Each structure stands twice: as C-alpha cells, then as structure tokens.
Length: 286
Ligand code: FAD
Image 1 (cartoon, protein in one colour):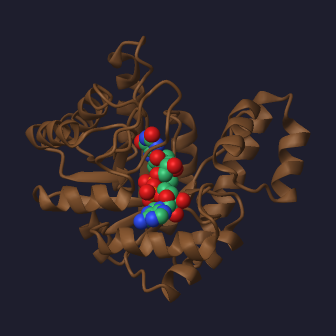
Image 2 (image 1 turned 120 degrees about the horizontal axis):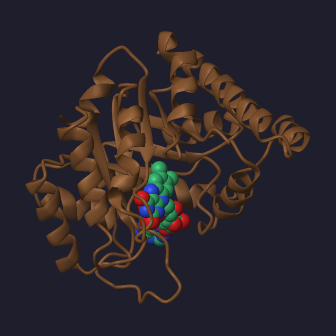
C-alpha cells in the first residue's frame, strides 16, 4: 500500500520509526521488540538507514520487508544518497522492489568521517526525482521545523523544501521538536511557500538523560523551559524520567491532534513499552 493514501482518510495518521540493530548485533535481536511494536498497529512503520554507502541498506530491507510480510504493518524504507553512487542506489531500489517495499523516505544523509562522499546526488530532492524516474515508489522526504542545521536561514530552507516536494516527495516527516509553537510556525511557512503535501510531526519521547543530550547536540532542537525543568528534576531517577518523558510526549501529541495535524510520527527508539504507553494514551483521539 502506498502510504500517501492514508492521508486521504478523515483521521490523524499515527506512525512509528524503528532502527536496525548495530552491525555486530544479530538482526534477530530486534525481532521480538518489533513484533510487540507492530502489535500496536500503527498506520505504518519507517525503518532507518545506516549512514555509510555500500551494504548499508541490507538490514533496512530485511526489517522493512519483515514488518510488512510477517507483522502485517505497512513499512517505509529510509534511503540516503550522499555516500552512494547511482549504481548503488539502483541496486538498492532493485532490492526494495524484490522485497515488496513500495514506500521510500528519500534523504540526503549526513557526511560521515572516514567515508568519501559520492557525487551523483547532492540533495534529497535529486534522489526524489531519481526514484520517481525509476518506478512506482511512493516517495517521502524529511523536513525541519527549526530549520536544517546547514541552511543559511529559514527562507532558504523552505525554498529547498519546496524543490524537494516538486521533485516528487508526496509526504513529509519532521525532525523531532519539543515546542509545538515552532512546528505551527513551520507549517505556516510551508503553506506560504505552496507546500501542500501532508506533513507529519516527529515526536520523540525522551526517556533517559543520555538520549536527550545526544539528540539535542545532533539536531539542535530547542528545549522549552518546562521541558528542561522536568529533565532536571528527574535526571537521576530513571523510572520517573521515563514516565515524565512519556507524559510530555502525550501532551505534545494531544495538542497537535487538537490543532489538526496530518499525522504523528513517533520515534520509538525500538522501545515497545514506551510505544505502547503512548499509543494507549492517544489512540481514541486520532
Ligand atoms: P536535504 O533535503 O537535501 O537538505 C539538506 C540541506 O541542504 C538543507 O540545509 C537544505 O536547506 C539544503 N538544500 C537542499 N536542497 C538544496 C539545493 N538545491 N541547493 C542548496 N541547498 C539545498 N539520516 C540517516 O543517515 N539515515 C536515516 O534513516 C535518517 N532518517 C531521517 C528521518 C527523518 C524524519 C529526518 C528528519 C532525518 C533523518 N536523517 C537520517 C537525517 C538526515 O539524513 C540529515 O538531517 C541530513 O543532514 C539532511 O537530509 P535531508 O534529506 O533532509 O537533506
């Protein structure tokens, strides 16, 4: 099923993100968690893609096809391009097709220390256009409510996003954020720029201190004082911090749904407990 058809219904789309295990862990190590996560029946699950070039895709393919085939939930495979040649992308697309994967989140990816970037694709928009020329995939893209870290400013970033949508991204998933007001302002900018595809809000329940420090340094999400106070108060009480992180994410989601967002994309961090708590709290509101 093409996931963009989900947005034609009168319902807030509710989707998850999972990631493959590290190279030195067996792939089976995530299957039990995935089964529990899939049992929550989100509208779809997206599977991240390792940042390196060659061979990075195989675990994404295995997991995305297992989610669809064995756990009966639609899947989306992420695909990055900056470290891949056109031939490598062709092979990956062949693999996606052979494994029944119909939906791709097309990304530029980040430059990685020690990996020589390739030059066939400079931006995600080029990958979107290429995938569209290669067959019947449904293509999504990423977007940044607080502006992508490399963009000169929000005007340039939104113009580039429009180029990506015009190149074939039928749906966008946002970077995580903790302040809904920033997301609403981003939606306004997108509308003014003529971006009319469905935009899902990326929500990450923060359940431990390390995770928040890592996420904020990587993506630059700003922390509202309300959120920072909660993290400070419970930073040395893991169970309380987890519950507070879940409660904060639920509050964000309730507000987003009330404001009519197209969808919620939950960064599950492969944690079935957290995914279940949040799903149960919001499933009657969707
Ligand atoms: P682009 O859309 O290409 O944008 C990158 C930068 O280039 C932006 O600053 C943009 O403004 C600028 N730009 C775009 N087009 C042009 C142009 N024509 N001219 C000049 N400037 C331009 N990374 C992974 O490695 N694996 C994953 O699975 C993964 N999943 C992700 C999922 C989501 C929902 C998000 C939000 C991010 C994900 N990332 C992942 C991270 C992503 O790869 C990085 O954020 C990366 O730095 C940008 O990727 P992009 O596709 O958004 O790039």
